[in-house]
Length: 419
Image (cartoon, rainbow, N blue to C red):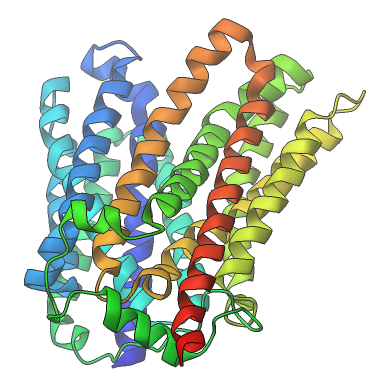
């Protein structure tokens, strides 16, 4: 049962990534067919992001009431319906209408699946699962390219992915009896081997003292935000996702306009940033359990910082900047999975669903706001500020995560000291 459900979850993570790149890949053709300006893509993605943030915040209540399996199945089904709706939409306003369930389904399933994996599976699976998300996000542009070049049209790409999501929905519904039979793991302290505050008794004492007394009790948003350390992890997660989305959107432009790289080379290395994240998460899975989440987050931010420094150094060759982009991608790889996986340990198992839902909302907020913010900044100051913008986000993420580490270590050690 453990392995069968895990295989289904792996497929679900591929499915999670599939819709994420479709709008961007197909929009150059879509906006012409729909007769709307190119800039209208921003409206569409804002609607999707808004729905995703709302459903992320509601995921804790939904998951406690219906269970992670039901929420995942319904959310994937909702996304499937939205994708099919996209495929039959002949006007922009219909796309905006279908964008609402598109976003609502994505946020709820993301939060529910991430929390379930954090509670029930080891750190290596969290990294590998997010690597599989990257596989899905990388496949969908090829689906869109095939649909357009073969004469099927952009709508066929949405139809193909929508049918794929519908098949997965059926598999998830069939698998529902398995979701309650996989026992939660007892995660090690997020610092990994040798981390301070590692005894299980310290963590259990903290959970008994700080968590709601009734199993399955709802944790309101205001209560979750008051838990010590939550604002720190939200700031770190916001910073990381802002960094990632800004790099994906603006790295190629910076390389062309400020470093003199040819557009073709810049585009290739821009894709290598994403491939670095996907490949890095796959590699991180082999040592995640031994290294620990805390060290993965710290090492990831530091590595991204090294990559940003390589991008910024004003040398006569563009090789260093191109290599720095790849290094930044590899450094980014373990941060997102490790932050998610450490949540039950840092804040308690009963509060983890609420906090992961808020983390997802913070993630999507960062991903949505940071790229246009940099666009406005670069219009005023120039794209040369790109590495400086990334450096600020790296420092913010690293400082907030280190402050959280110290807080968790003190909190975990306190019950032991009182004995």
